[in-house]
Image (cartoon, rainbow, N blue to C red; front, side):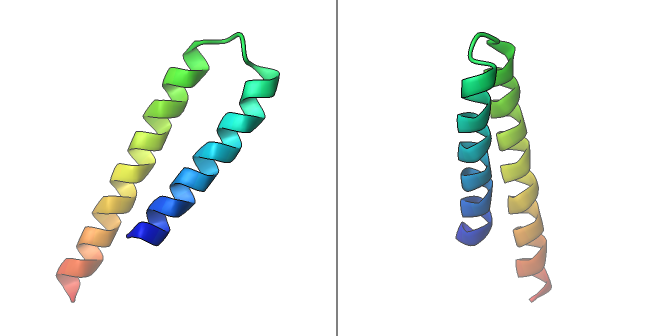
Length: 55
């Protein structure tokens, strides 16, 4: 699970750094980014849970 979360975090960090330069004055991007990150983390956790339950 930590590997999956690390991928989400690294992608989030890259996206954050990339958009901070080009769209620093657009506040809704930050809230949208947070929502997308939370959704990705939840989906990842659910996928890992399903895999664990099958074992």
